[in-house]
Image 1 (cartoon, rainbow, N blue to C red):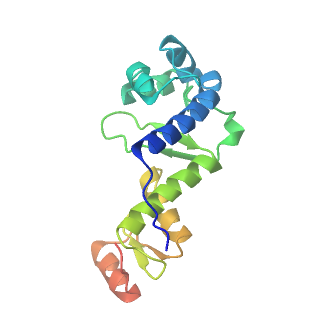
Image 2 (image 1 turned 60 degrees about the horizontal axis):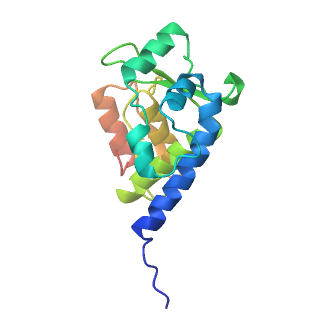
Length: 180
C-alpha cells in the first residue's frame, strides 16, 4: 500500500506563491482600493517570493477600510468586480466603530463555506448531526457561513434565534440537537 507523505514545505510555499500571483493578477489592476497601494509597494503578479510579498505588502487596517466606505458609500472602493458580480452583503458587528460592509461573489462565498466545513470536520461534526443555531442571523457574516456550511455538509440545521432562553432550551431538547 503506497504511503501518502505530506507535501514538503517547499511544495507548500510554491503552491502558495502560485495562488498569490494569480490573486494579485486579478486584484491589482481592478481593485481601486488596492491598486495604488500595491503599485507603490511594488507588489504585483511578478512578485519573486513569499518573503518579498511579506516584506512589501502594505498593511491594511480596519480603520482604513471603514474610512474608505465612509468616503465612498455604501460599499467603498475595495471591490475587484462590478457590483452585479456580488451576490451577498454582510457586515461586521460594529463593536469598535461603524459596521464594515463586506460583499462576496458566489466563488468567494464557496471558499468561506469550505473553510467552515473544515472547522466542523475538525470538531467531529458529520451529516448525522443536528446543529442548533441559537442566535438571530442579522447581517453578521459568521452566523450565515456556519449555517450554510452545516447545511452543505448534510446536517439538519435548527434555527433558534429570537426565542427566549427557556424556549431555546426546550427546542434543543425537543429536536435532540447534537451540536450547539
